[in-house]
Each structure stands twice: as structure tokens, then as C-alpha cells.
Length: 442
Image (cartoon, rainbow, N blue to C red; front, side, top):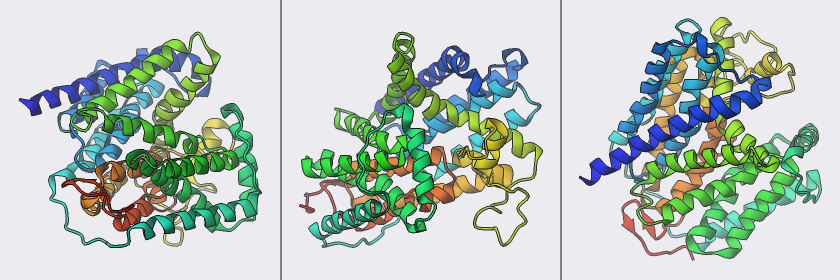
């Protein structure tokens, strides 16, 4: 009976979120942001598109994890909410029926997303972790962070100018220009600090009630935001806080999936309604709803259109540059930016499935989904004796990068592999997947 109730809540949450998503797109995003490429070609959409797409949108909720038992489940839901649903609907709204390409893409995306979750049926590995280092681990993390900040300050100077969100693009331009003569290592250090180490400090601050760790992590994010202008850095603390609240409330883990989907739906409704009366809220709506959610579907449509009609990239711009002939002068993000936004300096980074399609078509979507499932399975295996909250929250921020970056890029540049390494050497915490543990990290 309990499992049935949980399943009903998950399915209901998915239905509510999908309804709100479509309502928000049709009545708020499309009318106000059509100049950015958002369209709604309703007359060209068939009943088959609506029935088939809605079916594919809701079906995963019948087997998505209802309660939080493994850390990777947070990434699974992030991809469902922020990528899967937008990628199913928005390309069809933009291009109409577009032959059979949209429906075929949607079906393959459904298969890819389903395969990504199959690892939950496989027993976890028993992996012996590094133990006994206790507070040494946190001393190393602080030392590495301070060294990173020293490296950053030596290149950019000590600047702590928290610009308005509307002005971040000027900061980004200055940041990219300053990186021109910098070591490639600096890019990795900044991203790893923002996506892994600072979220680790923030997470420790929340879960262990360590105010020094919390403030250190937040201050670090603000410093990096002031230098790079990356909004994702600024909002990572908000993401961690929101997830922590869900995990902290009574039965939060038990109803994790339903709370997350319905919570995002409620946020979308609130921002959409209030944005009509406030410019500040309208800007927040544009950032959280249009940019964070709807844009993933828009860029998926752009990638699908271009790489359906033109040769695939075959990773010729990346790790296979010496093995295949790359047919373009620019990498896919700048190529799409130049074609659809009229500026090759625009980096139109798309989600992992759009990038996979750009490189290898439908087979690429399947292959990279299986590869990501293998990563999640290994991460969950390593995290078995780690505080479930820390392992979950630590994975959330780098997993967000899968919404606007390729899988290979996210693994290395955006810190997925580093998060796994941190979990491997992190001292055991008080609440592991297997039950409660005594806090031994100090």
C-alpha cells in the first residue's frame, strides 16, 4: 500500500509538472521570448504528436525512483525535469511536425532516458575505500581551495564586484579575454572549485551545522561569480539549499521524486504569475524558467535541425580530432551559435543528448546514456558508506552541467569524476545508504 501511494504521487507529480511546463511555454515563454527562437506552430502539430509525446513524457514516472535511496537519483530527476521534458516538447513546438524526425527523436530520447536508469536494477559493487584520514581530508580540501584562490587572484587580481545578473555578460567577456594567455589548468581549477569543492563545503555546513565551512563555500562561490559571471555558480548554493530542505523535512526522502517535480512546477507557476507585475520577478522568471528549463528544449531543436540535415561531428572537434575528418571550422556550440543566433562568438552549449546526437546521431544518444548509467552505478557503489545527503548534494551541482554540456566535458571539466574521487576518500558520515554512522570527520 505504501509503495502504491508513493508511485501515485510520483506519477501525479510528473503529470502536474508536464502540464505546468506546457502551460508556461505556450502562454508565457513563447509570447514573450519569440524573438529568441521560441515558437508555437500549433496548426502544424498533429494529434499523433501530442498523444505520443505526452505518453513518452509520463511513462518514465511509472518506474522513476519514488524515494531517495541512491545519490545518483538526484541527477536522474534533474535530467528528467530540466532536459527530458523540454527536449520532448519544445522542438515540436518550434518546427511543427517536421516529418517523422521529431517523433523519432522523441522515441529514441525515451529509450536513452530509460536505459540511463536501468543500473538501479543492478546490485552495487563492494568497493573498499580509503579510510582513517579523518580531519586530514578537510585540511587538504581547504589547502587546495586556498591555493586555487591564490592562483585565481594572481591572474585576475582581488576583485569582489557582485554585478547585477543583467550585467554578467560583460563580466564573462572580460573573463574570457583574460583567459587568453592563462594556463589551461586555471580553467579546470576554477570549474572544479565552483562545481565540487565549494558545494562540498556548503553541503558540510548544512548537514553538519558547520558555519565556517558554509561561509567559506558561499564566499568562494561569490568570488568566482564576481570573476566569471557564470550564473550557475551563483545559483548552485540555492540548488543545494533547496535539495537539503527536501531531504530534511519529514518523509522528504520517501517522497523525494514527487516533492522535486511538484516543487519545480509550483516555482514555475509562482514566477510566471508574479512576473506580470514586477520587472525584477520577470527577470528571475527569464533566468530560472526560460534559461534553465525551456532553453534546453530550444537548443535541442536547433541541434536536431542542423545535424539531421548536415554531417555529424563524430567528436572530430574533440578527442577524435586526429582520427576523423571534422567537416566544420567551428565546434558544435559556436557553429550553432553562429547559425541560429548570428554570432559565432555565442557558445550555444546544449545538453548531453543534443550533443550526442550532433556527434553520432541516435546511436550516440543510446551509447552516452549507457555510459552515464555506468558512471552513476559506480558513483553509487563508492558512496554506499557515505552520508547519503552529502553524496547526493555533492553530485547535484556537476550533474546540472549535463543540462548544457557534453557528457565527456562534464566528466572532466565540470567535475563529475572529481566528485567521485572526493566521495572515494571522504570520511564516513553519520547517515549512509546502509543506515546511520557515527560522525568521524570532526
